[in-house]
Length: 219
View 1 (tube, rainbow, N blue to C red):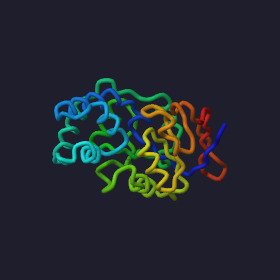
View 2: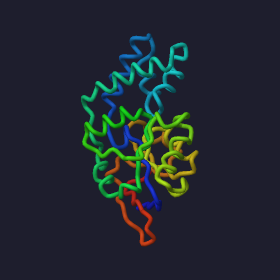
View 3: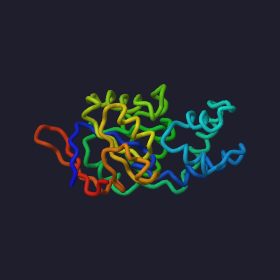
View 4: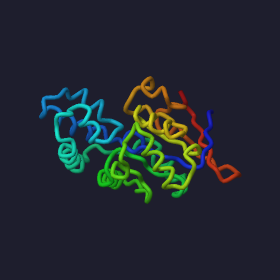
């Protein structure tokens, strides 16, 4: 059983704690179709990065901020199918509130809405798209998460489901575990370990005051 020692844990939201795939797919497919883009490609690109960066990548000819605002309104209104992913509720309950936070590419409004819908706690120091100037895969979001909690980035453990998030965490000097919910394991090859869900993780408290997370099915 691989074990990872850390002082704090940083979670991506969508695809790690919450399954929002039905909502994301509906909204982005509809938007892509309306603009004459390839829906499958747009949906694939949209996971794991800020909406504005997806727009800039797939449709640089558009007003990125205006399209971002439209898409967010649609996402806020689409909650059908949102659910807690296996193990998420349990691992958050096992961790002290000052030892974890969420680092998401969504806005604060959207992240808060999704957490409230599924009944998960909203961390006081959550980092969202509103809190950074550069989104994932840039290291800024995860560096901001470590700073918000007050821990050395090198002592933080990250759970991510997207290649861009893994790159962000690794660029910040953190250990990253890939969760195979949105992308295939091969696309998360940069991660330090691979799990199928947070059910594969157990939390232990070290005598030193740190944390040890045991992973039961690492790739």
